Amino acid sequence: MSTQRDSTTDKRQKNQYRLAFPEESRGAAPMAFEGGTESELAKRKAESPTTEQWMEEVCERENCKQALRRVKANKGSPGIDGMTVEELSGHLKEHWPVIREQLLNGTYTPQPVKRVEIPKPDGGVRKLGIPTVLDRFIQQAVMQVLQRSWDGTFSEHSYGFRPRRSAHQAVEKAQQYQAEGYRWVVDLDLEKFFDRVNHDRLLAKIAERVSDKRLLKLIRAFLRAGVMENGLVSPAEEGTPQGGPLSPVLSNIVLNELDQELERRGHRFTRYADDCNIYVRSRRAGERVMSSVTRLLTTKLKLRVNSEKSAVARPWERKFLGFSFTNHKPPKRRLAPKAVARFKERVRELTSRTRGISLVRMVHDLAKYLRGWIGYFGRCETPEVLAKLEKWLRRRLRSMVWKQWKRGTTRYRELRQRGIAAQDAAKTAGSSDGPWHLANTPALKIALSNAYFASLGLPDLTAHG
Image (cartoon, rainbow, N blue to C red; front, side):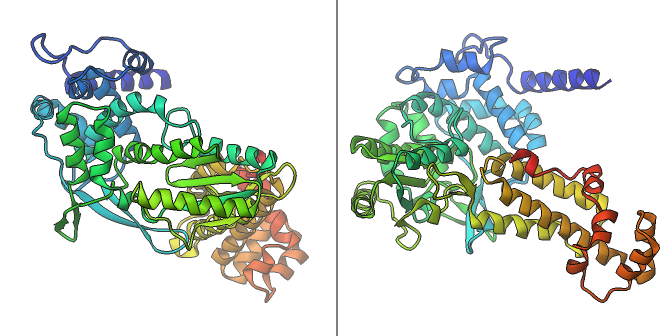
């Protein structure tokens, strides 16, 4: 039954793509090939498009199908026009010929992005710019073409937003440098990087490779689309708004100059988007590198270094992409203190009694968060920290359940039903100690055992450490 349902879903998606992107007639733009895979497309288009054909490649049927799949998989909220991801296929089915013509004529105009502010873990807010779903689709199609042309020229030390590269690889590379004896880090923090990118400089860098003025005009239009906030549109004079698919590859194009200069100087470094760590053998060398690289960033790349957040320090005193390191030889990956604090804060939110939901629902929501968290932070090499977090998490759940039971009679009955002896149940239920203290008693550990929480679907943190 499941196989039949999956087959039906696949057919429905194929029909959506076919309707949204009908094969072009022989007289219009290049006909998309049938039956090709994404890897075949990448191989076929590994080289830059011919002189003036960049926009034709952006609009190519297979490239657009790939972009639509990606936008639908990423989901996300609507932009200022209210169109949802689910409505995109139908909109393209009806309007794609006109949209495509505008793109090829160089007359397409993006809409302003919607301002969304999300709190930063260490205070303040991160400003995101959410494009409309249609603009996200077009940005994705452009990004794929730019990435195929540029990615092979990016530094091997750059790990952010690139195919087959990850934050884990960046952290492991940093760990390798330390094991080789480079036990001082120049930790660079670029102040509001995505808000500071100079448009003219970025477009000039892209124009060194892209001669198609329609694509350059489109990228400039996306950069200058403006931001709608409280019903008013503000123009964008600089920056690449975070929230759209195009922003990451544009940031890599900007910072590739930094990578090339660091390579030319022979530095050992690793960069993930605007997080850059350079590893050296001594504090004196680190201070010298900090000074020269700061000068490069401010004078040549027109970017600002946040002097308060940047530092020359021991790696185990800093954090990198949520991880830190031990001072062992060789070092081990460990959770950064802020990552632990964020974990506990999120667990408290999900297990709050004020949510007014059942334990089963609470564990379901918690498990969803934990699986994602384990997928990333399960790579740490200090399992004792995971064990402590797991112990804290279960104690938190027991404390929450104890509060839900409220009355002494209810608590006694629940403990007895879970196999606790009458005397122990009476003693625990009648205790004046608080829920957090009682959550660590033998009676509650047996009544609400690890196996019980596992039966509700609570993941095991230490099994992934």
